Length: 238
Picture 1 (tube, helix red, strand yellow):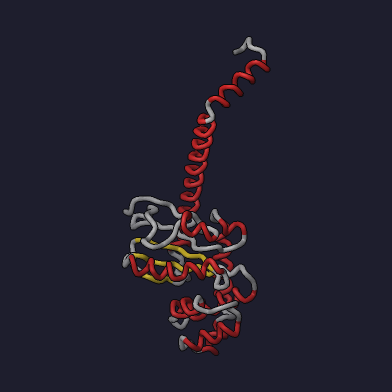
Picture 2 (cartoon, rainbow, N blue to C red; picture 1 turned 120 degrees about the horizontal axis):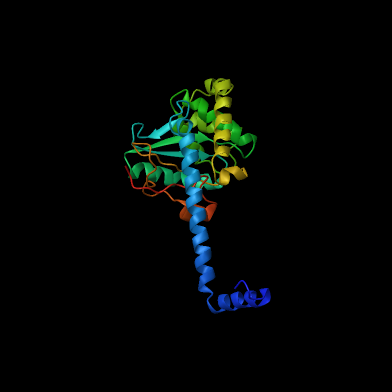
């Protein structure tokens, strides 16, 4: 080949590829496999480096089994239509796995109404009614604005005056900012500035990633509506 004219060499390569197009497909498949493996390693490294704030932040509300051996972390915005679609699936996941622990990360990026709702939800946590309030907000039709937030608060028997006062707590604003920064540090659609769906990351009892809980959509399912904010890592349950 060293002594072969360049144009003849290129012609032979072209002829070979035209006669064997499967070589190109195989090459592309290998490249995609390498990219997926590299992306998964990146996700694992990022999750490990942010494990404390993701899974064990004492300020983040927790649902499901608080002592569960599998943790699912959800970033959401109450005005996100995809998050709203995922709400019943989250409930299904909790019902399907009695060992599932859910960490809720308020991620209000769709405007002032969303931020107001997030602050109200975290203020409801101070009254011990975060989960009831959280689930009720996802039942609201239309935009979740301050008037609807106040209406829902009364419906779940929150002390509305105390709620409004607690919403001004600087710690609540700080937690929201921490969640926003955390989401931006992780790979996925959250980097594009929209929640799109549910983030699911699952450390097992020894801190290793495990399978998704039954009934919860991963990239192939939730992805039809935009995809999860962080692609779940699939591993055998520890």
